[in-house]
Structure formats: structure tokens, C-alpha cells
Amino acid sequence: MQVQINSIHFDADKALLAFIEAKIQKLTTFNNSIISGEVFLRIEKSNDRENKLVEIKLHLPGKDLFAKRNSTTFEGATDEVTEALRRQILKQHA
Image (cartoon, rainbow, N blue to C red):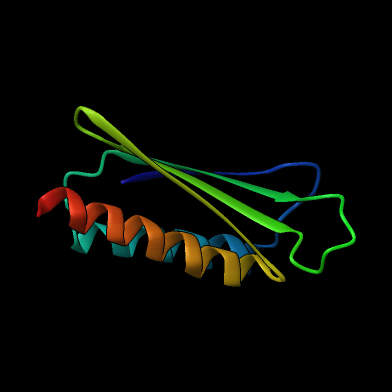
């Protein structure tokens, strides 16, 4: 699966990119027909500590799945957003 990661207005380090890539690739164990994924990383301007935003769009044949989550870290937000997408994938197969 092709994964494109976009960090908006900052440069994400290689460790973060590898972490996100691995998390998204794991989703193929639930549906191996995922074509590609787009990831957007943003740091929101707010006083809230949970200002790291991760948005992921997965492209499947005939359908797109989307989820976004905020957290205090990009890793935490990635965990939450991939879990949300995993539930969407499983619901689609039910």
C-alpha cells in the first residue's frame, strides 16, 4: 500500500514517519484491498495540550475511509486514529 505523509508547517522526524507508516501498514491485516493512505499532521494553534492533530484518509476500491484525532503527541493521536479506522474497516466487513 502506498502511504503519503504530509506534515503541515513543520518537518516531522524520521522516527515519527516510520511509526505512522508501520501503524497504517498494519491496517492491511484487516483489509488487504486498501489501495493507499493519505496522512496529514498538524499542530493546532490553541492553548489546549492536545494540539497535535492526525488525519488519515484510506482509499479502498469504491470507498474512502476517514478519521482524525487530537492528542498531546502525534504518536498518541496516530494510535487513536488507526484504531478508529480499524473499527470502520471491520464494520464494513460485517
